[in-house]
Length: 365
Image 1: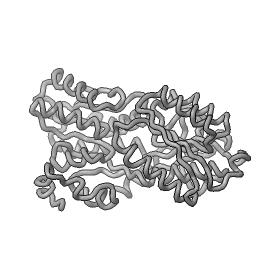
Image 2 (image 1 turned 120 degrees about the vertical axis):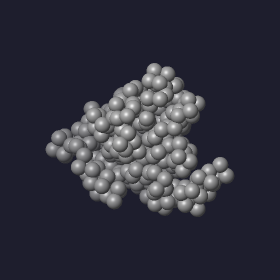
Image 3 (image 1 turned 135 degrees about the vertical axis):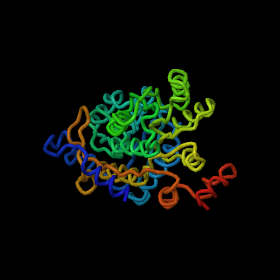
């Protein structure tokens, strides 16, 4: 039911209609004769933003590579680079990809604005660009991500549920993501839409570079400023930061509901142990598959009409053909029906020796 509800929300989100922009603005590559001549032997440049969040190297990269091989009869080549959270490095990587004459780029931007000129360079070189997970600025040709505002709403709703009748008995801390990530702003907006007026927000932070150590420092500051007896919950925009937050809470002798996102293994284990209340499960396979399908189609000069059913406006480009994937609230009650059922983790992955007793308590065997 949760998947269905979120899917409906994703379909109803405020995305732009095709009429908002011309075919040229939305990245129509039907006139790119060099791309049109390409068969299966294409070269795809894949640029991911960082390697501190477990998902990128373990899931996104692997799934995209697998799908591109599948779509090109094992003839497509993926050239990979990771920017390690450095926007300048990523811009240089785009330049390298252009020099190496890739046929299409899939880019998950470190900084959505800073990548703009590099996207334009690719466009000028006749290389289509698929914005992956984050809505990069510049003349992108396609975009795939999750319904990010709904992610924030899902987190906010879960926190309210965890707090119950005590929602206004104290203060919560909001630990948002990096200001360079447009997704973070959407998570934040969705969470505020749910939480505002229903809880007292004592402290709120935009966490530099999404780093757990920065979230940890922020949380220590919040505890000092608010007093540990007054903190009843924490909105954390992702699992990595939740880990840093929970470390600070433990040091202060606090145990309060903490949200998360990405269903990282460490996050799922904290949910099993009861130190983290929830995460947002974002099935990476549909997102990765969509990126691969759009990239291959663009490289081969084919239409995206059968792949991208939505249109999204970026700050610089109207009506970008887009695929938006639904999300699920992950708690200890549905681990079996989400990450285990989908093959993301096995019970053995989650229920290591340190978590076996906790797994037994919730029937995870």
